[in-house]
Length: 338
Image (cartoon, rainbow, N blue to C red; front, side):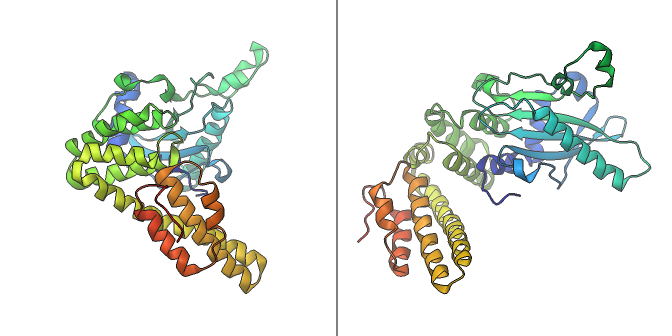
């Protein structure tokens, strides 16, 4: 996995890695003639990923093993494209990943036929998917050569086409797809209170909290249109007196993650300097970065002069105090440096 933190990757894997979510998705997305050949109760998540590390910022994948009704083993390969724009060459990437899967199978089962793989693309872009769903569409030339072109078709789920009424399945799946569909849209904000309330009402207690945590993290890190105040307001409305507790717990975890990420980056810069002074400066930089990351996550917007002032503070103890304050303050305006 790339060192770049990708909230789309994380949310997709945390949700679709649950067999119950994957099963519901397949039940409501695959053609009937395909479903009649599959035993979805046999779905088993495989640990492998086949996405090129250089493309992990745009693609995420999950591989499930499945049995057919005739007991033959096959695979379902889910490729999540979370770029904001469609890529004509996605089918080419698909082919590379399918070949990697077959190569791995052949190494482990040298005397057996290659397994069937059902490729499924889940596309999250802002505009409708405009390209064909088959590999042969990438070729051009006389028809007399067509039989020499490799080809396969993938199943396409285009989230840009769906509204809430078209998102079918159990609550867990509908919340996942709805959130993924509107993650870049301000329309998500007024839906949050009802969505959070449904999660708490329809799921068992601990499962609800865990799933709510996943949704909150995804929205907070991936959306450009939802602020920390939007999230707190939705939680207060949906969970009454529990809203602030849930949000506070989440923010504390953001503090730890932001601090760790900031310190790591700062120390790397310090090591590059090759001096003790450089490493100390790197640690200070990590603290400063963690403070700013928490403030941005909770309140959004541009800190402006405040960011510049924080970057001038070189006292580690003072910065620790500011870290705690960044978690606890009610608004960006009430955050002070004294």
